[in-house]
Image (cartoon, rainbow, N blue to C red; front, side, top):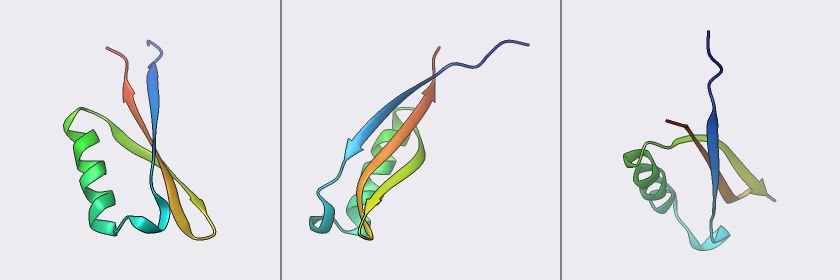
Length: 57
């Protein structure tokens, strides 16, 4: 069995300036490139970052 290797990237958001629709569009754009959302980063209840991963080919 081989070890799976992943690469990660962080997308910083503009906090209160972005709506849920904006976040959906960002997630869909990354997904179209093979990325999977793995974590959201929040401060005071506001999403400030999205962490994505994908397998290394």
